Amino acid sequence: MAYIDEEFSNLATELIKYEEKHNFDDNQMAVALHMTVERYHDIKSMWSEPNADETKLIQDFLLHNK
Image (tube, rainbow, N blue to C red; front, side, top):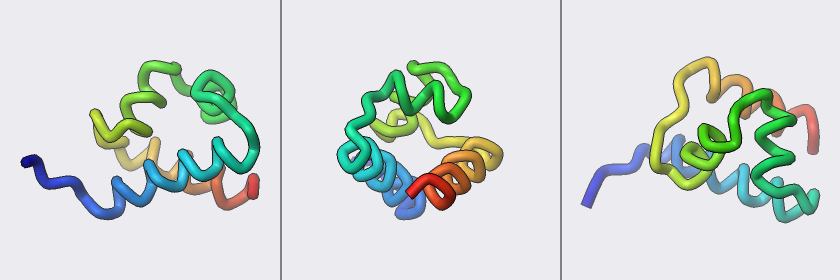
């Protein structure tokens, strides 16, 4: 079993919660975050860890768009 960074896991969980709360799908979230749907889905599904810039972008978005 692969080790999953807790911060990465929490970020993916927060993305899922945001989508559910605001009735957004992956396409809408990707557009809002200015990234490809494929990249967004990889991050949300924890297939690929976001880089520092993506992490900051996502955290800022979640913070300012409650």
